[in-house]
Image (cartoon, rainbow, N blue to C red; front, side, top):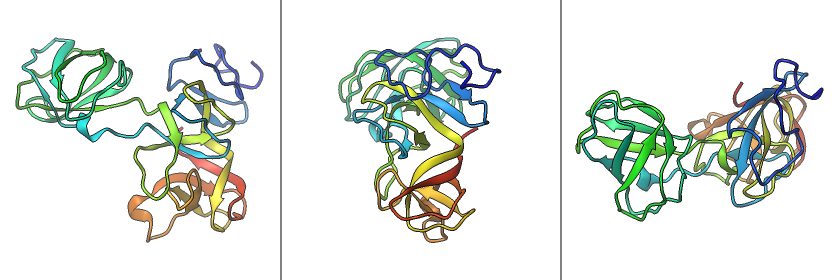
Length: 244
């Protein structure tokens, strides 16, 4: 497709299209012929709004520091017990399992699949990678979903997940499409940041970017740099620096 750079030829879904069935793997990266970068995502339970900053799915604290059973080196399946929050089938497929307490502390594994599971009930997790250091009942495991699966409008004031990009068009709830992560992009602005000012999220307006200051630096997730003078409540051009 001429719209995309020649380095990426196997593009099955163009920009500005929302589909119920995925055409690419979630997280797939493409570069346009003018140097902008996009990622393939699945929208969460609400339509994405053009020009809004979006984040990955909210972290589930009850699925962090979960309890493992003893698991041998080389195994690709293991049994873990979550906290008091249920999980849907393959909620963590293409996400990660991290080990935060030894044995096995510091290792990160890619998740292949798992069934739906009930609150505080053991279930079997299947990994893409074999276990490298044997796990014991003392090990604690954290499950983090693929940040491009179930993306949502960035919430007001407090993030519940990492910033992942900006919606450049409406992606219907639960459907698939492209968001932008790098380069010039129309973004909803809060306040009046100067040309070249760093802008971040969250702000007091859902889905918007606000000027980065020493006051909000502690919660800042960088969106990019103003490519024009910002106008409050308007969509202005920002040079995104979310991910290359």
